[in-house]
Length: 406
DNA sequence: ACTGTTTCGCCAACGCACCC
DNA sequence: GGGTGCGTTGGCGAAACAGT
Image 1 (tube, rainbow, N blue to C red):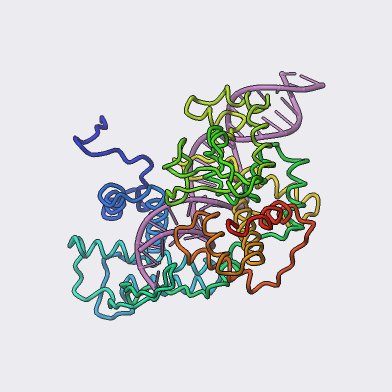
Image 2 (spheres, helix red, strand yellow):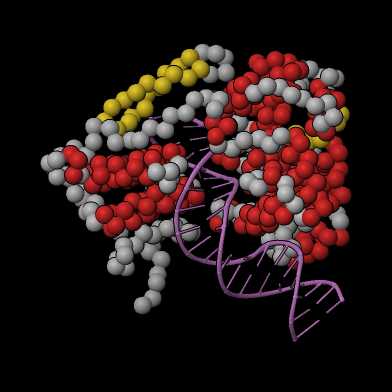
């Protein structure tokens, strides 16, 4: 048998496929996934995420011996209703998190909506009841607007109060812990890992952004006109060279001069140049290259295996040395820590209103509601700023000179 | 609330470069 | 030429963040 690409259809790299236990593909689900990638032009990472939910559903179908087309008269016997019950039970038993529970149900509903729309499935009875709810939101000028969202009787709500999210989810580390983490990283981890943690903690960049930073990005850094100690790095698809960001936002992130200098020194160090020599041409300009000449985060695999493994090792080292802060430490917490620290400083320097703007800029949030979560979080937490903190020094040094900018 | 995007978890087996 | 450091690759999946 010879595989040929059909005329005119694009290749979707990494498209997941779902198979039943007997080896047959679930054609409908696979078709949906493919159309999501092609017609709907969703990011491949999104497709993978969705497929994980559909896959979980398919496993349940087989385990519970339920047909996915089963919509009998009695509501409680219908496949979707049964699955909903199962999900809620799993959540209660602490087998899956509330956010995952909602996600699983939501994606399955999306899939069934499409099934109904394309008439691949037309059950005699309605699969669920549709309803609309209104959500109020205010924009940056304080004007309120309302928009409606289509929901179904099957969806599983995951209600969380603004301001609490940071606490039970990802939380910032204390400055004491941060110092400890950096200390351990400096002495016991590869230099690159220490540097990446430094950049994470003091610029708030995501790993994805960090891993795609190019030397040119650093060389093109612009000094902030009002504050000589601060530089701005252009990131996003619109920057030159492009640096990847979540949701493809383009903007500038701040970096202190001392950190920028340190990075520049590293860029031309023998260690890094050796790695550069091994890298493929398209990766040569990256600031951070693994010893084998690869980028630390591989966008195509939508994972950052090198970083994951390094962080796992770092945690192990932490356990060995009895550093409790490292036990559950994740790289993304560097961003979270940066955000709350910056918010604290900004609130102190100019009040909450200014703070929102500053933090939003620094973290490249397109939407204020995301930033507000951080501000609310620090408002609920007692403020304890130690003046000995490097971060405070670095930023307060400049804030006192220019309240206009910070 | 819904939808779309990212990051993170663990483990096992392997593999390359470097050091002794 | 065997150990070791530092990743790589692949498989399983979970849970969070961000924007509307």
